[in-house]
Amino acid sequence: MITAILGGLAGITLGVALIALVTWPRRITQRSLPPVPHARFYAVPDGTRYLACHNAGVCGHMQTPHVPADNGFWRCTTDGCGHIAEGDEK
Image (cartoon, rainbow, N blue to C red):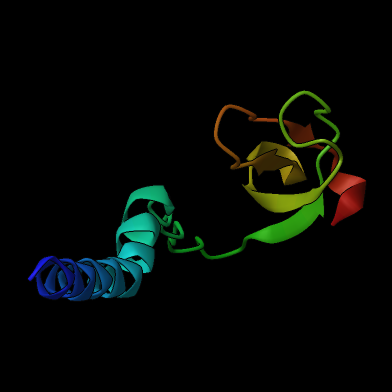
């Protein structure tokens, strides 16, 4: 009698453990994966050129988009920069 009861409990325990092993990876991945950031797209104005921006604090001497400014100069359009490139960099 006790053997039958213990055998039945062992079968139930094994079934619960099997269900937990099957569903556990899904629960782990749903909790631990951070949201994926979306890429930022924007239209590039006409006449834009990619020039080396010498504002090391914002652009870090990278090739960034510059739009035409007054008298043949170019202004960096990176957020928070506004660096003015000389006309000889055309």
